[in-house]
Figure 1: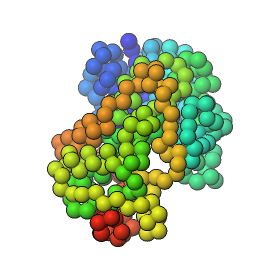
Figure 2: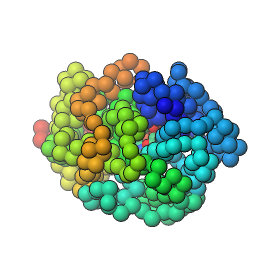
Figure 3: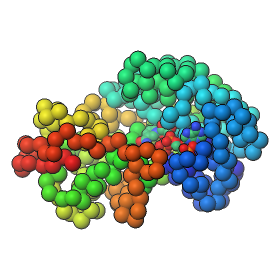
Length: 338
Ligand SMILES: NC(=O)c1ccc[n+]([C@@H]2O[C@H](COP(=O)([O-])OP(=O)(O)OC[C@H]3O[C@@H](n4cnc5c(N)ncnc54)[C@H](OP(=O)(O)O)[C@@H]3O)[C@@H](O)[C@H]2O)c1
């Protein structure tokens, strides 16, 4: 097998590259050479996917059996469209990594793959959707990127819609923040109820599925009722040496103290559909989600062996700016946020 990774050096793309190399596949990576070093064993092509000349030069390195597009988190639909036009003749199958944000209903409603996605045009510019807030702008852009790939590759396209991706290399800083907080010890402010279900998916499991999924659209998340916030934070405490104890505070109390969801306390979000993503189609098609405890333990090992959340490319944006140093009212008194 010969595959092309758009990206291929950073977090998910790097995990896809490692998996493909372990299978003995030939791996071409395409990126600007800015975010991270090339992975040994890959065949790097450096260029900018927003440049028509660079895309044309890339196409000259084909053909490929499969392209996995992991470099599009900041791409406009029109840019993804340009790339898909050039590559459609050079690849058998095109896997585009989208997000659950592309659904109109996320994070407010339970979702299946039949839930409506934003109707964004495949040739939309970067400005499309800017008037609707940061989250909706990203959602519309990703929905437009999906449309761009589908317009060129049709039934040769696979669209993956992950929720939150965690694991070694996670630069956003969600799980790394909780791990470093747990390591510091003391009373750890734990948000909401310990029994609230969460569905983070391991980056290595997304990578495996990206290489094996057949065409179609798939939600890529851990099984809906498998893991809880209590499981997640409990393992963070355990793998970092059991220095702290969790002090659970109800949602209402945190909201009343102005604690910001999702960013200030990473992975805490009260909207009912946040962790109500049906991923059974992906599981039936081969997605296997390793135990959450393994994701947490391996991320801690990565961090303690020199891994840097935030990476060289951009700083982590989660859990970094606590509004207050502490919050009264956890069941056992005072618990620190940051
Ligand atoms: N992280 C999550 O929890 C999450 C959840 C849902 C979906 N997703 C989706 O998963 C995908 C992968 O995310 P990620 O965070 O691993 O990677 P990413 O930040 O979207 O992409 C980074 C990779 O793309 C390359 N790249 C960026 N701009 C480029 C350009 N103009 N031309 C060529 N290459 C370029 C980078 O290399 P250079 O900088 O060296 O060019 C790097 O290899 C994204 O589409 C994201 O939307 C992520």
